[in-house]
Length: 66
Image 1 (cartoon, one colour):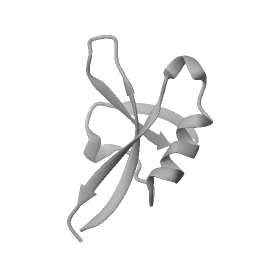
Image 2 (cartoon, helix red, strand yellow; image 1 turned 45 degrees about the vertical axis):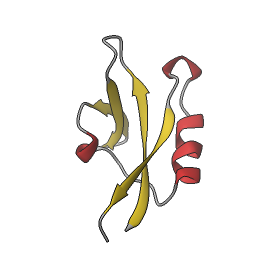
Image 3 (tube, rainbow, N blue to C red; image 1 turned 90 degrees about the vertical axis):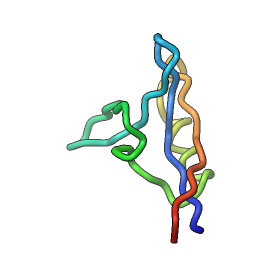
């Protein structure tokens, strides 16, 4: 199995929103399958740390079949 990572943040209602960059702007989607993927947790963490601190975004490892 290959390991990938995504960027997530918690929502006001206790769920998660996932980062999806669409046409030069940041969007947050409700489905993990629609999120942008990163090759490893390090790259996802780097992307999360470039966002404003009030978003409290974090890297989330995801396992996917090879």
